[in-house]
Amino acid sequence: GYNHAWKAGNTVFTAGQTALDKDGNLVGKGDFVAQAEQVFKNLKTVLSASGASLDDVVKVTTYLTRTEDLAGFREVRLRYFTGEPAASTLLIISALGNPNMLIEVEAIAVVD
Image (cartoon, rainbow, N blue to C red; front, top):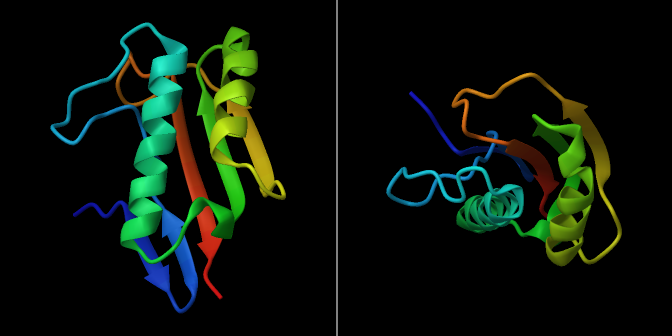
């Protein structure tokens, strides 16, 4: 049992999105920017499948495993979230479920 997203009324809750491609392969091993790009592509896809978009996101939680990736994260995030910024929480943690993963992002979106 795993869902990438759950829709309750007009609210979409996404599971944490990682840098896995559609075949389950890790994109960008050791390359933070490549992983971040894949994460945001996955987030966009999951939201779209749930009838939402990045513009509908009201809350984002991001998990990074390395402080030095903050600048790269901000750079990639700005390419995907171009409107009014959502509420955001950023955590630096020791590891994710796969030790080669450097970033995970979950979001909450509200669809009008």
